[in-house]
Every structure is written in structure tokens, then in C-alpha cells.
Image (cartoon, rainbow over all chains, first blue to last red; front, side, top):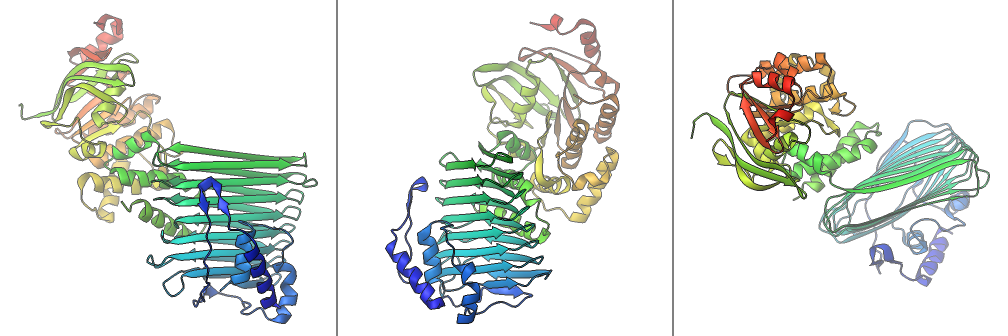
Length: 367
Length: 247
């Protein structure tokens, strides 16, 4: 049955035209032949994973895998992931199970240049899960990644996801996540997007339950002629549901960025609260940076806001730091680091925070 | 050239945008001397501090700045810091995510060009913080973030103490502070005087003379130094105001 499901998706995929992303002037091209992916992506876990989706399990999970709505970066990306996936994880955390952790590595190398992951994560009632996902490559291989993750956080459950994408400029990176949050459930996502020549990420969050909660924090860097499109969509359905996205980035060289956010307050989501904030530091004049925030509401009793700002590197901060002996590159790194600090401060995991700061320094200090 | 001559400013003309601010300023400072620059608002006092340190917004239209005999007009800001120039800012910048200790160690190593052992640095930092009556926990706070006006100024003096410059320019270090804070800061500065270090103190506040003994007092009006004298010149200003010093 799972094979039939894949075949059906391949058919759909073939029917669809390749997308053109006009905001960053990019025709998206998908690989013609999908090679096997022979790396084990899960390096640490303290729970039982579903290794293979057999027929019995398929019937159990079909309701979770087949979505009746198109989410994510676009239908072509989703059908591609569902039809051609060459790896993925199926996580089902039983109810009332606490302290679950997993580390996943979405790595690309010359033997595994194409990574297509299709994932399902279910965190059942009152359970907890932390997932750390790293995206790295060997720096030599022209690679392609497209992922699609379906996430269900059931009543009272809590899921934390930390993603650090540090691909080289030889990799194209696409990642879609569709998230369903039930009553009193909570999901926190830290998404660090540092590398990749062309990247598109999408979070589609359905705040279904009363008092459901989602907080996404995003830090990104754009260097060289990197192009990137970040999209965050929240549907507020439950009463007192909360959804937040805060993004902080720095662009240099000739990079292009689009940030989109949609907060959609649907009738009945009384006392729901949402906000979308994006700040970007422009380190060069040849940059294109667009922010497209949108807010829709069919419910009156809500609080929603959005804010976006873009600014050149603060000359006075640079002067201050350089007057203490720091050269321009070093001062620039400190100013960017300082602009990321409010988001990184919220990370309770000090090791992850230190890793991220080191990666930012390495990337900006490359010249 | 006088062997003790540290800074020589020769007919300096500076503009910001289309505004001429310094209009032919001359000044010489020898090693170990303390000079006080006083003047009304808009005279160009802070411009002098900024241009000496090399702020890119200030354009030199004429004249030269020599530091230890070398023309530094074209040197970058950090190169000037390495030569031994230090500016204590009137409005220090807040830098999130970077602790006072880590910043000072980075700066010290950048200015001296040497890696400094952590233990040695921590010992020095503690000594200087004690001297300036800065509580130890401040070293773990982000640079100037959430600091009061007085704390920011003390932090500037702490940076000066650690970086040990040849010429420290103190731009309105006393502004916005209460008398006790001013006293602590200037007493701290006095203890940092070593007979070699020179100070260029930019101020509005002639009470500074209660704490600091300048070798020279200069009156800066409309982009030029219009009078130079000893400490009693500051008292004259108190009595007569700046009006009488206009050219």
C-alpha cells in the first residue's frame, strides 16, 4: 500500500509544472534520477522508531500521512517528497512519555548527493520530545535536499525542534513542515538557516486546539549569491491559541531573501494571539530583501501584529567596536552576532547556542 | 620635533555633510599631559573626539593629525586604537550577546596583537574593576546592555584602564551623572595616570577641576580654539560665560 501511495504521488508530481519563484527569479529544477540514500539519519534516540512502513502500519497511519490540503512550499515539492523519498523517520511517541530525545543528521556527500526525506512525527497526549536536526555536507558535492515532515502534537504534549542547516553553497535545500497542534499542546521550533545556495523553507501551522501554542524562532544568513524564501503560515482555530514567528537575519554580498508570514485568524478562535517579526541586517548594498507579512481575521476577539525592518550595518556600532581595536570583519561579526542574540538567548541549550555562534562566525569571517 | 610631543593637530578643518564644524583647529599634547577642552554646545568638541578616532562620517577638508610624529589622517579606526588612541564615548553602544569580559579580552588582544592568558587577564580585570568600584558580576553582563548612564561611563573607563592607551580622549564622560558617580570616575582616572599617559578631556562641567588637575585648558568656540590657559581659565568661564571668548 505504501508503494502504491508513492506511485500515486509520483504520477501527481509528473503532472505538475516546475515552479518559478518570481520573487527571487528562480526556476526550480528537480533531479531527474533519484539515487538511493544509504546513510542512517538517526544518530541518537531513546525511544523505538518505526523502521519500515508495512501494510498494517500503513492503515494505522494513513490518516496522518494523507493530508487533505496542500501545505508546504508547493504541491510539486510535496508530491516529490512523498513519491521519491529515499529516507525519513517515523516517530510515534506514546502518551504520557517524558524525556524523549532524538538527533537526526540530514547529511549529503558524494555517495549520497540526493536526500529526499518524508517524515512523520506524532507526539501523543501529555508526552514530550526534543528533536535536533543537523544539515551538513562534504562541501564538494553538488547536492539536493527536499524534505516534508508531518507533525502532530496531541493534547497536552510538548515538542521542541532545533534545526541547524549549515550546507555549503553546492546544495539546494527545500524543507516543508506541516504541523497540527491540539488542545494545550505546545511546539517550539528553532530554525537556523546558515548555508545553501538556494533554500526554501515552509512551516504551515494549524493551531487546532484551545490554548494550542507554537513559537518559531529563525536565524538566517545569506552570503555570495544565495537565494532564499522563508514562508510561515499560521491558522488560528482554537480559542486562546497562540502562534509566533520571530526571524533575524543578515545578508551580504549579492544575496536575495523573501520572508513571508501569514497569520490567519479563523472565526471562533477567540482570544487567540499571534505575531510575526522579522529583522534583517544588510551588510552590503547589492542585496535584495523582501518581507511580505499578511494578517487575515474572520474573528474579532484576537490580538495579531506583524513587524518587519531592514537596516544597514549600524555605523556607530561599527565605530565603537573598531575604536577598541577590532578590525572591520571582526566588528561586523560582532554586530551580526549581537543582532541574533535576542533570539539565541531564548535557547536553553547552551551547547547548541555556542555551536550556532561558531558557525555564524565561521561563515561571516570567511573573507 | 619635541621628543615628548604625542599629538599635533595642525589647522584641522572638518565637515559633516555640508556643515563645516572644525575650522582650523590647532592643538599639541605632550606625553603625560592632561588637556581640558571646554566650549558651548555645537562648538565642535565631540567632533574633535570623533575625528581623532577616525569616525567615517566626519570628513577632513584640510589640515593634519600627527600622532607620535605620524600622519594618521588616513588610518582606519582600529589602526588608530592600536597606535594608542582611545575614545571614551559620550553615548556608548549596547552590544547584545557579548559579555564585558569577553569583549575586553578580545579588544586587549586586538590592540596589543598578542593572545592574553585567561587567568592573567581575569586578574587584571578584577583589579581594575575594584579600582572603579564596579561589582564583579558586571563582567558577565552584555556590553552596556541595561546599564545605567553612570554604569556605561564607568565601563568606558574600565575599557580605558584595560587597553592602556597613550592618549585617552574622554568625551563628556561626566555628562548625565550625579556628583558621586563623577567623583568615582575621576578618582579612577587619577589612579590611572602614570606620568606617560595623556588625557584630552572634553567637558561642559568646570567642577571637574575639583577632581582633575589639567595642565592646560582650551576654549573651543565655533570650530577653533580661541584661548588656551591654565586651570584658572575654567574659573574665568564660570564667571564670564563663553560669550566673551567668541572671536
